[in-house]
Amino acid sequence: MAITRPAPPGSAHADERSGPGAPAGGPGPERDGWHLTSPVALTLLLLVVVVAQGPLRGALSAPVMQSWMTVFVAVVVQALPFLVLGVLLSAAIAVFVPPSFFARALPSRPALAVPVAGVAGAVLPGCECASVPVAGALVRRGVTPAAAIAFLLSAPAINPIVLTATAVAFPRDPEMVLARFAASLLVACAMGWLWQRLGRADWLRPPARASHEGGGKGEAFWGSVRHDVMHAGGFLVVGAMAAATLKAVAPASWLRTAAGNPFVAVLALAVLAVLLSICSEADAFVAASLTQFSPTAKLVFLVVGPMIDLKLFAMQTGTFGRRFALRFAPATFVLAVLGAVLTGAVLL
Image (cartoon, rainbow, N blue to C red; front, side, top):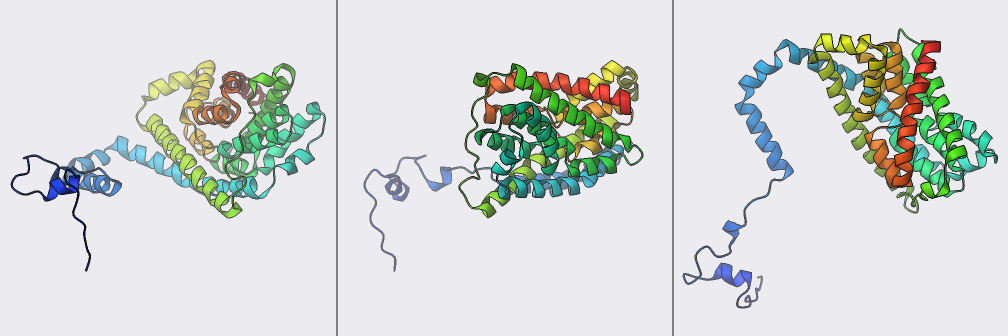
């Protein structure tokens, strides 16, 4: 038998058990209200769908919505396997390969370390979300910032997973793979050399200790996988929705006008890459769906996105400091656009 102690006078429990003399409207379980939890929200959403299934069915059967759903599903289904594979491999390399390996593999001279670090980006099969903490770990272990910057920019764009996804997305344009590799490596090395010549030590805040260091490797691996899947998957959905909307809703005359002007087309897709913040394993499928635009404009989209977008700016600010990000982001954007345009003029 459970024994309960009498509640002290004046306590909330005493008020709840008080009799007819208790003041009306006093505290009690019936006045606590209710909270909107995830199961409640899901139940309410299902009820709304059931009640409004007639209008919803009619809206989804419209030609515009059918076109939107076709593009959205096609982009997501094509990109998802590459995204998952890239997340798994990048988490494994980031956790199980010690950052000191990269420090030992780089030349001691910064001018030579920059291109070597840029090419070494091919060994990190992941998206830009994984390259930022790895670049931070390189700086913490004494790698020159210029080389770490080259690695930061090249890794998300020239690794095997991203290049394979690009080849699948552009099956009739194999030169797009070569152009993406060349332009991305060119811009990464140019930014590294630019930092080596003009960068100042007080612009770069020493990165904090990585969250997985000092903990169990298995826990760090799955934590990295969960983090990257949530972030990259969310941005993939947003990017697919935006591509489907452009394809199905935007007037064809607008897209033809933007695509018909080379300067406007390049600038439009460069800004779109920054705003969409799509993971580099998936951006090729979004670019391939923008059939109105020229190959050079699509290349700009593929080069700019993995180097500078909204989520990358936030991550770079948190890792290296605001003073670094405010100088690094505009310079990277300009060089990425120019490098992609020059490469596209030669190879595409």
